[in-house]
Length: 230
Ligand SMILES: Nc1ncnc2c1ncn2[C@@H]1O[C@H](COP(=O)(O)OP(=O)(O)OP(=O)(O)O)[C@@H](O)[C@H]1O
Ligand SMILES: [Mg+2]
Image (tube, rainbow, N blue to C red):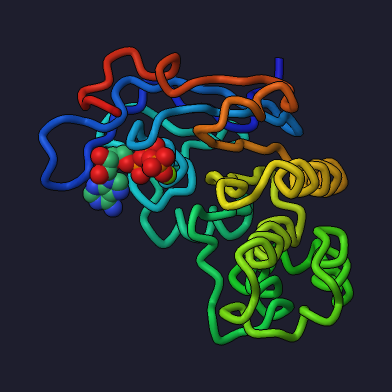
């Protein structure tokens, strides 16, 4: 049997200064190409979980493996390189560079990874923006002059560039109405399939769950959450 693409084994994490862990004994496995929906109430630790998977923070206990390789014990700089090579992240607040235009924000996705740059072409940022539904007239517009829905499409294109093994999406549809949300998900799924990436999509909106290969909830991952959630 092959290793899962991503595996969290009994992971516990408390933010610095907090006594109680926000995530306690969390286990999770994701196969290559799989699209998984993860639901959880506000404050239940969804973004914290993605920060752990992305190597932005390291767990106090447990193990995180990607393609069978232990990543949580890497040094900070090596975790950053791992993230740049293998993960595309759509952040909850998008985290675009406001002074760069849409296309340069997408190019940034490859800037810190030669592996990822090698898996793309000069035309790919424009192709992805078009595929995600951003009109060509907006490609050269500064990110801070784009609508929220447009910024979200740029953030998705940036995550997808260079075909990373895993896309982490942190509530990217929360600002959209139902029609735009469904349209965005259609385009995201097409491009995730095109890139051969797995997708871990976290949201408090359980109505989206049916569209995914598998749906999980934060409650089912954590056997002993030490913090009350709303
Ligand atoms: N950078 C941080 N430093 C300290 N505590 C944090 C930090 N980020 C999150 N927390 C705390 O961790 C808990 C979980 O927050 P997190 O952002 O992971 O929840 P969430 O499920 O993503 O919520 P939401 O649906 O509102 O985005 C909260 O109590 C929050 O205050
Ligand atoms: Mg969050």
